[in-house]
Length: 100
Image 1 (cartoon, rainbow, N blue to C red):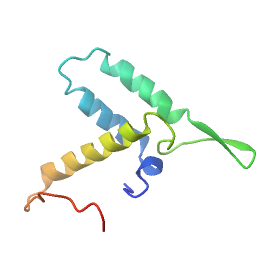
Image 2: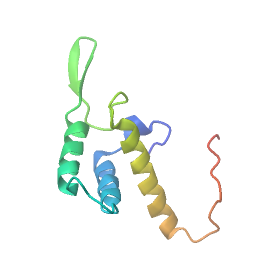
Image 3: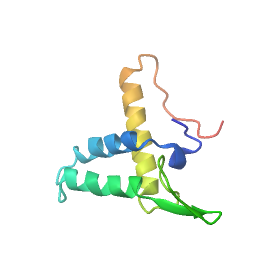
């Protein structure tokens, strides 16, 4: 996963898996998880844009201007980190260095 271009490189399957994971942890699910996942999948897979007079459908990633974009990127990265650290056996970092 390309973290520097997280919006445009987030795989849809990873995003949906992460959202499903976090929705399953809710204490009070007002909206059914399956309903929310279907709606999220529509936002991810039916995003169209125009470039150079031609129309395209975005097949990977999240549209940067999508209202759901920031949340999808953060949830996907958080899920990735949880999975990574669950298998990590060395000393875990206390704080991440956000800048290289």
